[in-house]
Length: 138
Figure (cartoon, rainbow, N blue to C red):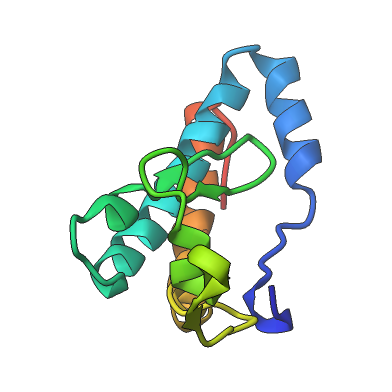
């Protein structure tokens, strides 16, 4: 990932631990909030992915934890997704060549393009989790 596409929230782990001390079910809300952020990015990325069957586009899934936003791609349904996004050689005797893009074509460029929107959605989600926990958020 290139420098402009990493978004770190200072104190996120500590926030999750503090929520767990208040109520053991609250950190689950943090994971759900992170999945909501991932869903925003997936919604912006899916229309950009080329389609023959639609398997590659539908393979994007939110797999967040309470400390990180993750998006799983490819899998059994579309094992070629990394090649589609980043490029390289594949096929018999590596005969199919797609130009290699270190930053990818779809997911990471979309994150970079919508980083401010993503950060705003994440901020609202974290504030919502804090308010659900009964914390005073100003």
